[in-house]
Length: 247
Length: 357
Image 1 (cartoon, one colour):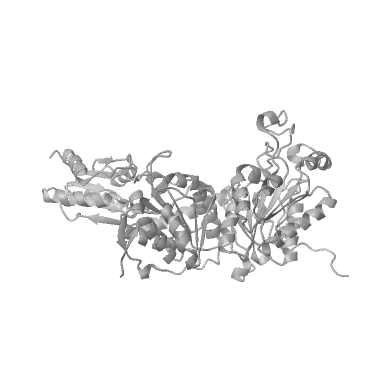
Image 2 (cartoon, helix red, strand yellow):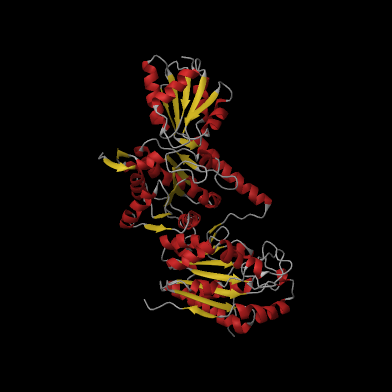
């Protein structure tokens, strides 16, 4: 009997540091599998962010660069501009991409950089210990919104996929979730599409992945999945927000 | 060699192209925007890439990405923009990515003004970003020297895997002088397979390269900092550059100055000689590493009673000069931080008062 399953070559054997119940592992695996399926491991350069996935480069088996907080799209731009033959992606959380890195992601998207952003949205800062993010839901308790996010004080959560879809430059923008198997298969298809568009030289691509953070949400993984499905997915609706126009 | 009359900023851009610059990223700021305007027209013709970024913050990281895959890259800016790049300068140094950074200085602090200045000496030589790191800083006093420093900057950055800064006063960018582009300064980029994160296929390698600066282990962090310091010590041993003038006389006073002030102070030395007053001069060309030993020796010479540091700021390099002189004689500062360049007669009058003439 042949092998039914093997780990993607694009993934390393190092054990991850992620908390129990965290979805980063699922996303790493999807990215690794897509890179294997497309046969692009040797021409891929990943850009790691600051946040929980700051050590992402330890869990993949191809070239990587670290970026400062929020600057991954600028680093990816520099790589891709001088080496357009490479496959370049950023892996960023919502504190990194939607707060400190808004300028970099908006302008990379608006210039139509031929890069892919894998955007992990779990509605909170994880690495620094559970602070409020621009994506934190109204009323959601975090260490810096201990009485719940007050939208009269700090506004409504930011919907990155919708925001970027307002730009004219052709792009592939999709939001999926990684909280249950039925969402995960769709999410992987979106990631694959994003990388394929990049390989075809078509456009900037971003896949937002609604995720859970049981540790900083203060919930069990089961309750986290329930809350994400009942609260997050109503506000952060899955779907393809922008498809590249025929050019 | 053929000479052409060129504006400093344009000559700097042309020098970078001839030196094999393959990526130039920048954000507009006076008084250096002509570098970008020249690059956008001429760099693509030479097979390079031009991109105007959304901010100097982003530009610094575009440089990091392009340098990290082993290409020769440059950016240019002026003080306020270099402030925004400070974060990325720290990352470039930490991740050991070679790049050339040109700062055509304007007055400061804050928005300051757009007139010539040397206000960013501290910023360039004392870090200008978080953590223990150094830039290799070269300060030209003519457009020809700026051209040569840019051309040498790329191989120097590669030799030390460290950012090199060309620190020019606004005048270096804005004035026109005849220049040539020496053929012997055209170098081949070094092989970067050992560290560049440019895709394993590029190197035909199974070994991946990772450019990172995060170290959570205290021993690993300390070792990384030690290896960076060893590199800066190598620079101190090998890369000190300075020009000495009139030091073979029995001078009573030693002038230290850099960049455009050396042109003015050279005239000061000549005119005072006509009056029978001998004044020596040392112009550091490398601001880091700093020519401490040369300045100490010159200040310690019998007959030298004092050192005057002339700068287009409120006294920055003077601190390094004081440290170098080690109390051998008094060190004072003279200069202007408004954007006006003190003419020779003004400096001569000041020296007269210092020498009680």
